[in-house]
Length: 469
Image (cartoon, rainbow, N blue to C red; front, side, top):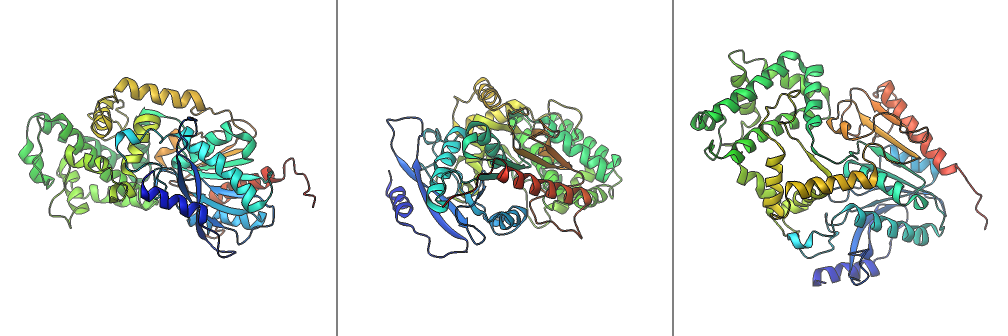
């Protein structure tokens, strides 16, 4: 192991909790490769604890690490925190391997990415939960409840399937659990939201604007597109990758504007701006794009610039701290979720960005071995092992926002009487993580939060056996 990893392991061994009843950082030493007995290397996984409301030998609530540095917000506030208060639970949040400072390898070169997968992450959780029971609750049978969002939601779902003896229930808020390479349904869902909260005219403007831009690229009108969209590098219309990166960049801007405030008013305001330009759909798109980038001298929308965030291999670099390369590796080898446009005409973002573009992205980032066939086999394996949208699971609650485009990768109807699903209309990603607000929350949102609270209480006290001293 590197000197840095050795220091982290020393921290994991030597770190002790210095205060009771407050958020604090700690480290857990676990194996780099849980499935190869010849490899006994260890690394330190970062986690946080909040035990301010914990009862002795009480339950354990865990916010499962997702594809980003460890997030501690929901072990200090929000619905999960509130339920922990009611149940006298310990609160923990772990950091997923390869993200933040939980580094099983020295760098993110391709040959070092082998240990970034769900099975290794689930084994980390299994070892850690056993440790938490022994070290904090002194109760080997302490009830464990997992909460996860996004990839953390998928891991929580899969953990309940693979290690049911270690977890009593899981709450999955906006967790995409079905691997899908050509995720055209995502763009279809964005289009539906534009129609519903913007207008049909807005949808038509975007639809037409993208297709006009595509046609201009096919006609070789590179100079005009470069000038009108204020591109930093001249658009090379002879380079299909550059053209597709340009169109994907436009789509990404619209997606960001729609979703980043988690408020349907963002969609209405975007569409109102689009409709100010009556000259043509392309000019409407150009004017809106110019307003979005009004404080930039020019905009980078070529393929090489698109790839930059994925090529850095130093864990201390900003792009790896943000998790870009690591998330791409998971997409290429396990999840997919690439926002293609070529498979569906029921979305407004053109039809040029297909699977071949993202196959090339995977190859450029990690090597020629990542062929389309390899990627599809990997994603099929994920769904085969865990069941896709039909996981064999009980004691789970799947919640999704009705405007969240990722909802199409999550169960939207009850899987069985013990694995219900709740769709919350008019809301975006993970709308139910905050505390119940009886004045501001919609009736449907309040009902969803109360349902989660009741289910977690049921999971904890189902099969309850009194603790004997």
